[in-house]
Image 1 (spheres, rainbow, N blue to C red):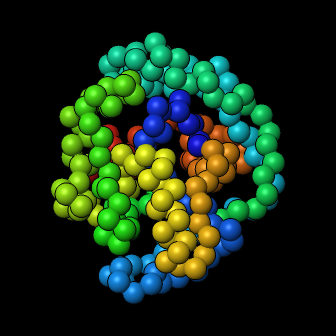
Image 2: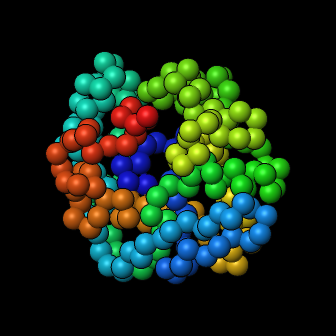
Amino acid sequence: MAGHPPTLPSRRALLRGLTALAALPATAIAAGTDGLRAPEVIAVPAGPFIAGSDRAEWEAAYLLDEAAYGHSRTREGRWYEGERARGPVTLPAFAITRTPITNRLYAAFVAATEHPAPEVDPKTWAGYRLIHPYERTRRHAWRGDRPPPGREDHPVVLVAHGDAEAFAAWLSAETGRRWRLPTALEWEKAARGEDGRRFPWGDAWDPARLNSHDQGP
């Protein structure tokens, strides 16, 4: 996944998106899901792109982390040094959701299947050795089987890899189309573009362009 961090023990993260076998229309999900619609997808053409990172990009990322958070935890953990070496990769064409999967759509999955709602306990969170303290996850925590009020259209987070696969299988059954998780390289190409830029908009860091945990509501 673009600028991907190291793999977490249970790969618990945000459900960044789903890959469809082809570019799909916004097909209505079957009755019983409150009129929700399948995610909008965009087509990514076949061809090469610059994937991965190099030492200069790692250093830039460490400096950004240190400026933003006031500590060097990512540098001490050598977070970015396990990334793929920068270089060209060629992928076939694919389609991917335009945005991450929302709390609203994931809640429909939870309601329809009685799958556990997203959650993480303090001990598990501490084992990830992430930047944010556990307390900062609580504003994203669900209330029972419902997402936090006012965050229905925010990306669903704290989702384990197995949960994400179960969601993709459910959406496939509901829409009659096959959905799967994107590969790391597919997600990187979709998010980063073809020319190896550091961010979707270019190489210069610009927090005003973000809608993130730090910058968003």
